[in-house]
Image (cartoon, rainbow, N blue to C red; front, side, top):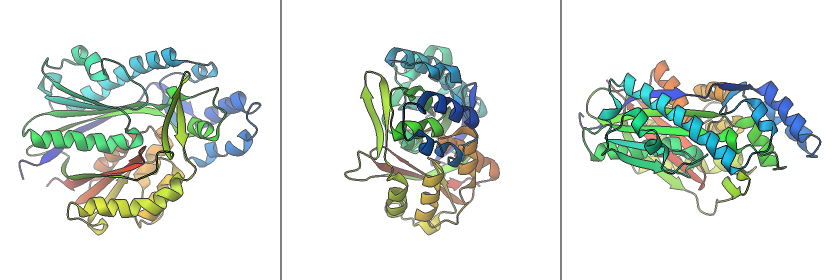
Length: 350
């Protein structure tokens, strides 16, 4: 079908600073061990997280000092802006397009904010047209890589021939807190990294994949599983221990229901492409989706190299899946605050 929405290109980017997991555990021990009684027990997560290194908006030494909202958001505006330009320009270049060809830009991020939004901040530098449509989205967290992709694809479907640019940027490390002596904060220092990704979507022929269907599921009474608490110091992570067992118990039925609305079943999916929230979450997702242990290999590889970057992580996984060769039908799956699950199915382009 020439009027179906296609993923035309996909590009990823990460900040220049690299933190190796050995360095991260040493720094965390220096900063927390004498102040947090359970640190030595929790420190095992640095080894079990399946992460070798991560990229960060600031060098490791920056995190030795306390930072407030102003420091954090200045860093966010600077680095997120650079990553926006890098990822978006690369995706457009791959598509054989210029920024002036973009009709609509959808930007997702939940780890910082600017007003005007990043798309407006970078508009002149990118070369966007004055009448470009801008859709900045905040608050979808880890699910935003899939949910934002779905929003962009629906906009492309509603305007045949329009060029829709989707950009996902997260600087999770800027939420690191010296004053948060909590289990979730320690786990966050072991797990999260920074990165960005961008896609070009447009209806018509060609492309890397065809967007077949989109869907979401919002679980009732789950606001305490994941999210931010916000105070004078910045963002503070909300991350429940119950997440892996919740995913193992609830994800399968949710994905089945999402697929059913498009006339599909899990058996119709040749490859699930999942957001690697962590090794325990990946194991829970494999169980929930009736996958053999170890099936989510691209996910574990991305987690090892970049950590959990929140929303763009799924697009890093998709990039590897495309390079390896997509099967006839695949499904991108991500979970995020709400608590929610988001799904997009892709068909291979002949």
